[in-house]
Amino acid sequence: MTVRTDSHILHQQRRAGILLHPTSLPGPFPRGIICHDAYRFVEFLHQAGIKVWQMLPLGLSHSDLSPYQALSAHACEPSMISLDWLHDRKLITEPVEEFTFKNHQHLLKEAWTTLQKNKSSSLYKQFQKFIKQQAYWLDYFALFMAIRDQQDQAPWFKWPEKLRERESAAMESATRKYKEQIDFHRFQQFIFFQQWRDLKQYASERNILLFGDLPIYVALDSVDVWAHRELFLLDADGQPRYVAGVPPDYFSETGQRWGNPQYDWPAMQTDQFKWWQQRIQTQLELFDVIRVDHFRGLEAYWEIDAKEKTAINGRWVEAPGQALLQTLDDRFHSLPLAAEDLGTITDKVTRLRERFHLPGMKVLQFAFDGDPKNIYLPHHHEFNSVVYTGTHDNDTTLSWYEHLEQHSQDYIYNYLGSNPGDAMPWPLIRAALASVSCLAVLPLQDLLGLGQGQRMNTPGTTEGNWQWRFSWDQVSPDLAASLSSLCHQYDR
Image (cartoon, rainbow, N blue to C red; front, top):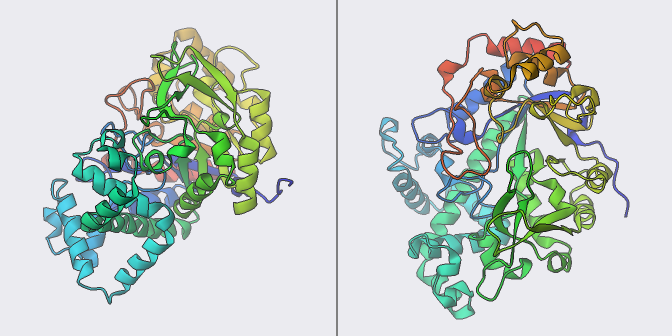
């Protein structure tokens, strides 16, 4: 088979995007939700001439809030569900001003009870259609979550043996016993997907693409590992024999030991990567474009013995990335994927990415080490790439710049030809927009000129991450107009 040469969606025109996870939206709850603030943000993007909204994975997170360690490769975070949407459809009757985070789950249950009383309604019929269409992942997920609720949120590998091993009699019994909870988890996913579909349509009508993120690995405590143990390198007790991570790099002297179980790639290949096909199918319902996090792991992955405490003593193991991507390309055509190709990148990784016409990443914060051959410098950029001032794993550009030594700061201004009076982060923002890269993505923190303490994530740490939020009063009245002018100036 040969790779199709259909135009990649990001190649159709030069665009600018903003990086903001929905949980960072303003609002009365501890984390942002799919409410009017999400629509207001889409309107801001439209006014600013921004054509892409990039975000992090939407998965249902564990207690650490990391969207990269989700309970499911398909399910989305129900705490992002808008109660206003339910109220507008008369599924809940409580006054809007009384909505609180504490009664969010209670009100979702009220909405579910109301919908069950109206089985002739179009919304209930849509629910029935949804659970049939999504049964390939939803059935296992709902059962998994219902059992997890009964087990006080314990990970599946600590459940009673018969449930842990998915013995048929135990599964049938749990399906009957927990039917109400199972249906409620199905309902929550239905509502999320309905609300997200509406938001996606609203963005599409304004010529804005939604750019999602696909973690290459899944968490050990996930329905995917519980339901498909044969696809992972696990021991007889369901524990990983090898875990994922990366060798020592820019972010850590000991590397990063993520702890995710490694895939059994030969097992995945026996059914034409069915699990991956289904995963991409779900994500393409949510997004127009998808970033594959740690893309290099599809060519070769860093395998760490689970007994190791750090990622130092790992080894590179070849993965069947070409076979996987060819299968996905045959199924979905002209894959709307982008590759996170940061870190240790070999010629083989680059050839794999280019074979399928996938844009790579250029991060300007990595560019200014004094080496004119640095691939992240704008004069080395290429059209088939996405340029960022920084990512969710970087500090804000202003804070990054302020922590540089004076000679490094001078080098940046000299390279960019900027006046030192032109305050950061705007020289870097303009450099990103001026780049030949087909897409330039700017974290909202940079556009708001935010400094230290405003980053989304610090790699290698487990506390204080994924909680950053902005408020509308931080957005200056002229920001949209300024961005619109810059997008026009740089043909984005």
